[in-house]
Length: 197
Length: 287
Image (cartoon, rainbow over all chains, first blue to last red; front, side, top):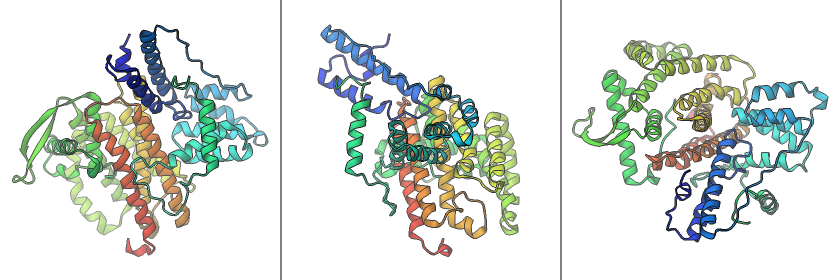
């Protein structure tokens, strides 16, 4: 068993506040939402699990309180269930083959979304964005499709260095509606970290 | 590769910059030792990054040694010492990729541009043979990439994704081979794929006007300038974002400041340099 303090990168003498801060930073780094549609989802989830366990363990040791294991929400069943399973296992070719069997006239929003996922897993970002956009346009109310598209747009605003220049495209502005929906989404999805429990 | 994988010097700590330079000089020395004096000329920032990443992954750097620059004996410099194959692998990759690049140029260019290549190529073929013998897997990957690239560019309706795929796949496989276990392999292949894609697209963006003038293949040429620039920015940033997300999952200790600097500052800086140059210039001829 690894030392939970090592996992969080703090010393055993750290205060509760310091541990919470370290945990928060790591949770932000490995947050599953960031990797929701990425092929590295499993790796990120594993890391998240590790830090969750470490944080729980430290809290247990310090408080002798009881813990709850994290529950993870399963994807809703759909007619594309098999496709989703393939994508989850990173078997993109098989997923795409299955999708290819859907007749053209039956290709709905979810079909487009899943095609987008296949391309995204391959790293073909451009094609993926096209499909995500189509999915979102066909069913604007669907949160899953919107998140995928928003994630793409978030990455397009890659400007960690502060050198990102807007070249007149104006794609980086953020409206109040965006902020609101982001907070709402974050609130709904935030079941994986322990801070707001 | 094309020299886009650079650090942003201004954002580095002095000791990190010195370490980076020491790897650069160390790689140059290795090229001279393994191949020939001429082969030092193929030293690139891309392969320096490859060496830094390898040393960081394998924890192979064993300290620094004072010495003198071989090209300019008056200049003192430090050399990073390394106990594993990081240098020799990076040197082999430099040789192999330059060799294939020259071959590619030979097929593409006119008579006067071809002439000097005919002189240089024989100097390289011996080095290339040796590099290919030492690291046959690198040789196969680069050769395969070149073949796929030719196929992709000869198609009439090649999309951005398809055009960038060969380079991306090559770097993905090169980095994936360094993973210690399955999760790390997955992280490295995603990092490699997105970085390779970014490098290819940067080169395409950089050569937009040149390729248009010369009628060469470029995945962005099918769009008008405004639209092309938007697509470039979008595609480049998404790739960089995904590369950074993958990088965040790597647990590095050695040279962490350098690799992080490259992804967070160096590459965005290169990107904005190329893209802003493209938007500023209105007259095609001046480039």
